[in-house]
Image (tube, rainbow over the protein chains, first blue to last red):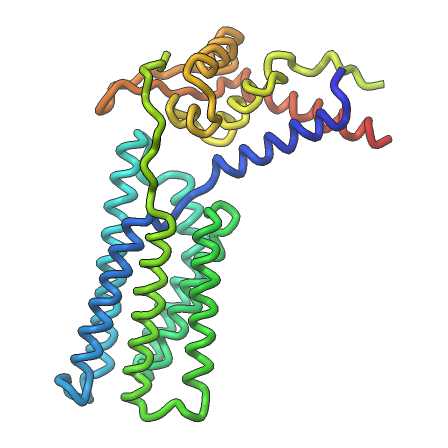
Length: 216
Length: 98
């Protein structure tokens, strides 16, 4: 006859397995690496292109947003490609229940970020701070089914965004164009370096398991 | 008094309990995924899956993708039995508290 503690043990095993089975990684290591590199490239392009270097000061916001939205589009396409490739290897559907859960969790933050971007284009230096914070909050919204590394990345972005916001709200924020240069560096530091560090920490290690052909 | 004989002995074994739990969490599982998630040997996993299949708890699908792939899913009977098994465990925990 099973005891109460045995029954509790079994329920714990069931719960832990259920949680592990529903884990979904919305950002894989290769995608993070690609996104991180694209961000660093965009950061350097924007840094050298902004006034007083090349771009007309009047066209500055458009130049800034084009570069960073370009990074977003490229990274999203790379992510879609890797998720599709993974679904092929797994033999499952591309739009998996895990993917749907991740999209539902991320959607509110992404929607707010898109609306803020549209409304605050005239103060371009302020928008990146909210991109960082909302991106971090979006990642944290996936915490119930995401691996721990994604949660840490989410907190890093929230902290980075809040820290940047403090710099810009402070008395030594400087001229708008200087602020935009600083905002660009913050973008490179967070979306670039954070993603590269995440990729380095989560890069798949070579498995030692061998297939002994024991499938029934 | 609670009737402990209601506990499904097929599911109650630790290895099979793990398999049934994973199968209850997704529509289907490939053999290799089950193996890596549970950390079982091929032979052990095959034996447990065969027991569950013979009792009508698990269905088997063999597909030819890039390579042959065998996937497993819970049958309606398996899902019902697993749900009943969970209820029995909860009853045992409740009974123990009283």
